Amino acid sequence: MQRQNRLGQSRQFNYVYRRGKRASCKELSLLYVRSNQKRVGFSVSKKVGVAVVRNRTKRRLRECVRPLLPQMRGGLYVFVARPGAAECPFEVLKTRVQQLLRKVEAYPVNAEGKKRS
Image 1 (cartoon, rainbow, N blue to C red):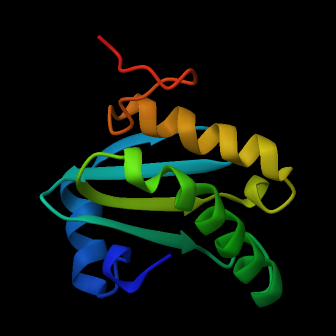
Image 2 (image 1 turned 120 degrees about the vertical axis):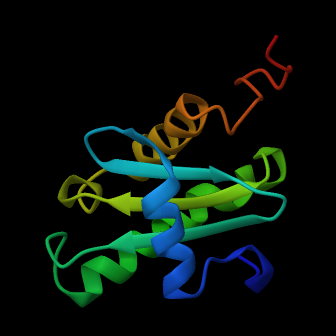
């Protein structure tokens, strides 16, 4: 994921945590705030596992979001991984990310590639 699409500073994360619209599932939670820019951040706590597991989880989440980025609406996104995300198969994780984006109405394209009405 390119630097211009990353949430970097702690204050950006705090802003999304305070103002964000939340959607959750068993493995993930998504916070979304509408904005002109499109930036994505990932939060994986120590409850998920040791450093190796947390980093792998973040890499997998980044790879789930990367191909969806062009269709996503402008906004600030924070994906929060829960402990179940570490053991979740990649395809299931990818589906969960898409479901959460649709829940917060940030991903206007359905599976067939047609615009939602």
